[in-house]
Image (cartoon, rainbow over all chains, first blue to last red):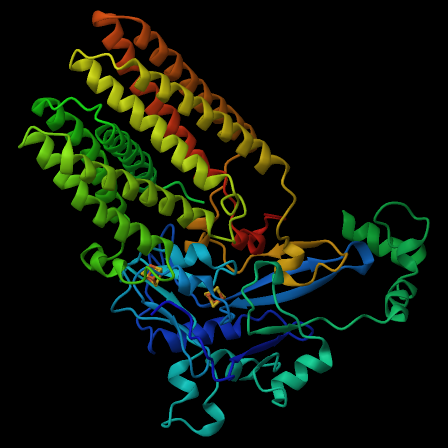
Length: 252
Length: 314
Ligand code: SF4
Ligand code: SF4
């Protein structure tokens, strides 16, 4: 049923992603692909993987943005996946009932047996969290690793989404954002975690933790470390004396 | 948004078909419809033919057309489902109306009521088609008040023009229908012009800053995309037409549309072969204009996901 569950139980499973420490290594995206190619949504096929115009389905993709201008600018790596929204139009637009939001934990899923592949849900998601599988003719998306988080065959410590388990810098956290006392909720409160594109009114569950503010002295220290570069020796010169000689030799 | 030909053909063809059905039904209700069987056969053939061809083409882009029947189940929440349900229900009174006209040779009495029912359901179906697009928040150029009325206006205008040309081929000249088509067409193109001005000047709904939450008074720009080759998101939703091409195509659409309307009026004022010819030419040009208009409707629509791929605002 694509109508949203009327009374949710208050559990909102989701991710909290720390943009301050994400190093943009794509490990989460790769492990996501690895797990899901054999899990609940398997197979997630690659078309022409070694040929021209390759096309493949991924549930998690890591973008890199530059924020700010000049010396103040910084690179922020930005993993993007389904936010398991509380008001997901991707679900309500689905004509078949294939897309649904689970009442018990808020996870948004697609039933591959009833999806007709009309793609409307991917149009309705502002976050680009749904990708169409041309081989199977159905829509695919992040399942929050539903086949891991409740999997009794796994050690308890492994019952987290694949992306969370693999992040080498611990930038990804999984938990119940509906419980104000959960670890993830506390993290969000502490660090000012925010939702993406609130203007769309989809009420995403996932939260992003902003990069921490930089200390001003650090920016100053940078320029203090490079006095030679600012000597009068002209464009691209490394200064005078020995350095100038090295510069000349290297520039030949 | 990627302008898929199946969907462009679907919305324009079924739009014209429903427009024709609406006009036939209303005219039957008012007793203005000649009970000629062959005319009935041709008119219902054109109207239902356009509708059916459009609906069939819309199933072409499905991954699983054989499961299409499932799409009527979620009418409570989904405009696409509502459209499917309405489109199917419309066939019932429309079919009965056609049977009365073609086989019983009658367009009055209970048959007229079937026509009226088909007209009402056709209006609702076209409205639902418009709402599929108008309800999508991630595409601000669709998510506005212009979209649905314009769908309805073009449906009525093109339906009237098709019908008028057909009636001319049968040696009739119902010039009020031509005038209705011209007025409706003028209104539709004027509204489209207003829509274009609206989308050109509307403030951004979302930006790369709000999409990443990093904007807070700082510029945010994409440094590196996650992948080198285009993915599904970019192919389906990242289609973007250059501003100057869009402007040219807008002029092409508008010119085709306006010449079509002028030809329609010329047809109404002339008799014999030249009149018929003008009416047919009016149909062809209007159809062309609406096809280009519909192509642009997709090509000019920007989806919020593009904010993650280098687009600055939508
Ligand atoms: S992020 Fe997109 S796919 Fe996921 S729940 Fe929200 S709208 Fe649906
Ligand atoms: S593609 Fe599948 S899941 Fe998405 S709206 Fe269509 S039927 Fe529903």
